[in-house]
Length: 331
Image (cartoon, rainbow, N blue to C red; front, top):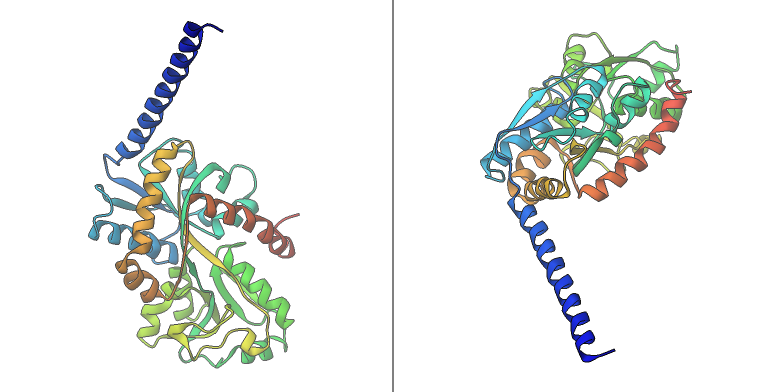
């Protein structure tokens, strides 16, 4: 090949490299340029007063007070259908760069139970996992049940004689209840409510004997000495409830991992995902998040980025399917 030919080839390669560099920098610039230009609609697919509502409002308040976003997050409760109505609302807003959704374990199971028409996690973009919540059985302060052993003993006298409230059919509370029943060899009458707030109201009104609840859902009533937890579905006792035994302490093998995170509509660009993921990472690393949410409501920190959280959610579908089949909710 002639010198002129070699020179031409080198010029072509240099030009191609330069164009590639320009395009790469342009993409990076677009990523850096994305910022929300109007308030962000933050959908909570459950009623006010429950764990998801507290999660959403805590995120919104801390992000605003710590100035992690140039625009506020406006919380909108969209309850109904065991979380499927609000979840489907966000799924249908494909490409919307100014919408987020609280996302918990129940939003994996509820569409499985609802069947066709309900949006699934596959119709969303996972942004980040932020915490692991705890599952406890809670009774009124004056309840005759002083321990979970008392519950088991009375339940064995007559099947379905005791009622236990929980949020949604086929959700975390329902699956935990099935694990408890299997481990103890009993059968309780499970009563479904649309939110943790409704569960507390039913318990205090004497409509159920006990409820499944997360700390965020009953801390105010606990502080007011209206309710008391008697057991926790965790490997170890909670820091804030050191006198409350685990199921394993009581000879029952019942544990459950309950994740809480944030999702967005599908069809958003990697730049938008990166922006919201970065915002949630700032939130997760902040002192305000630790003190005003994790410590206050007794949750465990559990940061996962978008890719990691997507895998966690996908894997959970497989494990939840078995419990739902045992409950007779899936064929």
